Amino acid sequence: MNEISNDLIESLKTMGLAEYEAKVYSTLVLFERAEVKKIYEYLNVPKPSVYQSLKSLMDKGLVMRVSSKPAIYRAIPPKIALRHLIEIHENAEKSALRELKNLEKINKESEVSDIIWTLFGENNVEHSIEELILKSETSMKLILPTEYLKYLSFVDNKDLSIELLMFGTDLTLSNQYQLNNLKVHNGYGIDVSDFGILSKYLLDLPLPPKQYSKFIFVLIDNEEFMYVPPYPGKTKSGITSKNPYMIGLMKILFSAIWEHTPDVI
Image 1 (cartoon, one colour):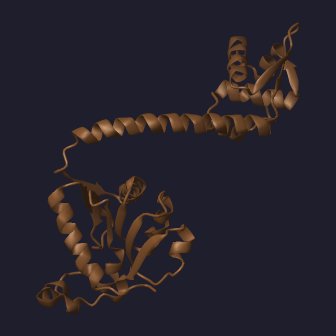
Image 2 (image 1 turned 60 degrees about the vertical axis):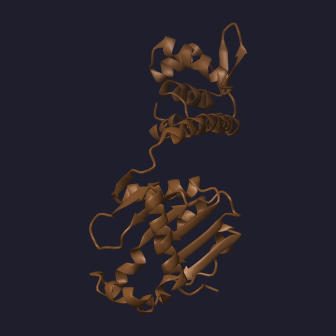
């Protein structure tokens, strides 16, 4: 079976076909049309598996029987077949998303909001950023390093009220991500000495200046937040919570920082 590559079979499996289905469909594309005997002899697989695969492929609209006696099958052209598979996936995605959102609502009603969870590891931090941005419905307050600005592409509601403190002066963000209500401040312009009595304590923090640009903070809808401090280390770690007290505290801290950084115009 040299003509049919493993890469092709794995790709078709990723798109939703079982292994024998992928092999039978590929064989029919190779031969254009074939009897069952020709298929299972070429593939060297059990005859019942070929019959079962042909039936499921016909149910999916990827194969059709063009003769009854003898039974001869042919593959739907690949371009059409792959479009069918994509449509099946899209319909399944919509159905699954609808059902999962219903489960989320049930979970939200019973969720305890005062728990503070920990985040540990780069992947968990990135997944948490993505999740919060996708969940946001009315507003977001963000402090993001440059390498994390790409997550703005996950904003579904382009009219969302967004306050972003970044470390730079990229003027293309609104157009790049089509965000209509994005306000941006430049974190490099913060004046720590302007914080009054707190200035002394801020200046005494054991944090190299270059690390400030690693600060990560996301607050959505004034209901849920995540925070990853900018301290150097091999592994990122932080916290996330819906705790009302923590939300209030984080809003105050963000507002104080926001007011002491210049607009990006």
